[in-house]
Image 1 (cartoon, rainbow, N blue to C red):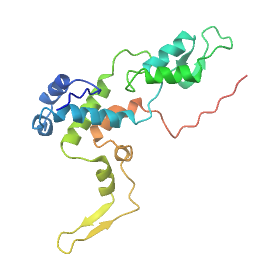
Image 2: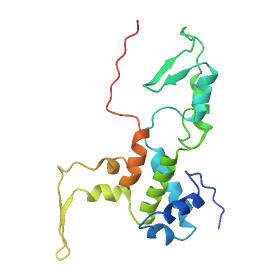
Image 3: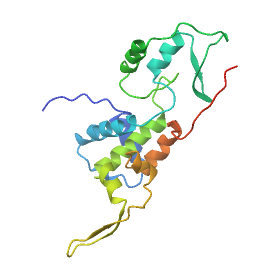
Image 4: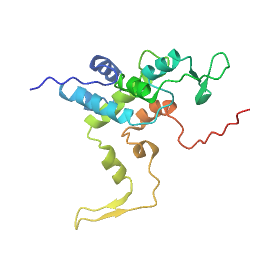
Length: 195
């Protein structure tokens, strides 16, 4: 068997401690040891598909080197510390290289560690995956209003509004609550005026 190197949020040891304190942890504790890192890796992939506020820590560091920083209240608004217009900016290849230098989306900004909430979200998603929840299947099943066994019958309600976490591919509502504060608001349009 090949030795696989997984890159995921948190650690197996921390996840085991998390589940020791959680009720209904059977899917984690009953899972074979070889399945746990796979579940955490899959959970991390789900998390990293989301659109987060700010920048990866490596990009943030690059922007700092150029004297640029973001104001938390005005996402993605660059301000030069001395108030003058900055002529020298990082090039797109430099930004892409900084993006590629960090495998995962977290840490972000000035953080040097992955936030606890992100690690807990990864553990919750891993639990759901080990418990057999498939995000695609969960989304498809959401519209089912009735199902039969004899004469095999299934009815769908196409007007049903899907649950937000399932739309975003997250199979666990608790994990979604941990992730939500870190997400960029997709429905906000920002208009600014330059004087």
